[in-house]
Length: 378
Length: 100
Image 1 (tube, rainbow over the protein chains, first blue to last red):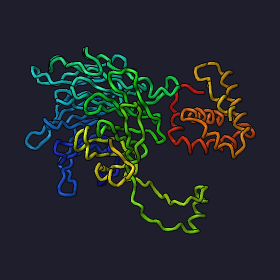
Image 2 (cartoon, chains in turn purple, cyan):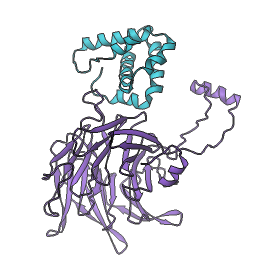
Image 3 (cartoon, each protein chain N blue to C red):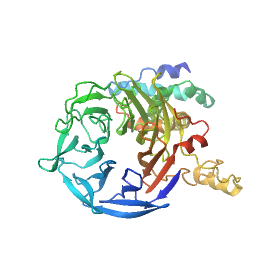
Image 4 (cartoon, rainbow over the protein chains, first blue to last red):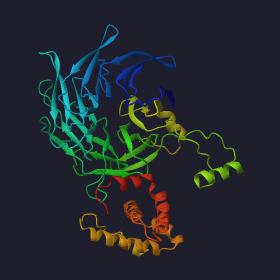
């Protein structure tokens, strides 16, 4: 686990390049900073300034080496590296509210942008006119789209939005690809078709409720979809059997981002400032809490002095044993994004989290497994 | 103990009738105050996760209209329910769209 503190401003979003030597981050303003790894330090190598509003999403396409950014100024730019300089190309999204999230598709011939205009813009490159064209998915979305994830077949797109639902859409564009084969989520996939819509997170007998869906993630095979919601629940749906949505109500603060690390386990992180492991049992269809992934080393075990005891009593109304002066986790503020660094979503060995404290932490799965005895990553 | 289970069994979530909700809330309050302080812990253990969430909703509803003794009793229940349900439980009270 290595923590690197970039700046004091929150990191709104980040993206890694293919060999993980460069990271593009946005420090909560209009710019993107690209840092290059040199030894153990990170050196700023480029600054991309083109947006007029805060940048809300960055994604770096590993194979074609292009960066797409989207921002609160309702625009998206595709950046390509030419002669050592990143050159932007404007993408006309035709949205009238801010963009919230952007993701390249697995084959990198299109990307999807979620926005506050209650629609998803799927953009592809039209070589006749030499520019990016966007198509909109509007139909059942009734509020801001908060997060997106592509299915490995390059056609299905999962979107979580503020109308408390997680949906799988088809983003099939006939100009750039051939018809996809049938998947567990359905076989006929015209553009904009809703293949799956979740009920409110977890049918906990409370009727329509749940919360904003903050993070969604497909598993490596694309058969499973996980999402986290603002009512502190995590849910996993298995494609095909339409009504099996297994959800777990957790006791922590809401989780903001989630990612599969193997076919059966996922890591999620959020307002609690530490990543958490969940294990899904496909046979039983249940999600269980695996454990907290951030156990600080037992630092000082010194006894608490009498003076401190009274001080605690005075300040906090309790004479508890622990001297919890600050958060004991590596991140000091909410974690906003999690990304898999090595191993893909099926056998992840390293993942990275960035948060509102301006820090980036790289977690190593093997060392986590060995340091926490009960942790089992299935 | 059974009174607790019974009163939590059919919460008036779907009705728009304010009177029904108030009556249900009054009933829950009576049951909660009838418990001895030492029994509160056992009461919470007997509920499942959804029950704890529901109980938390009633507790917060009760906080909204404090009467003479209710706050103390509710605070006690709140502390025990918090240790059972965690912060996530409170979040579900805040984000739930259909109130008790």
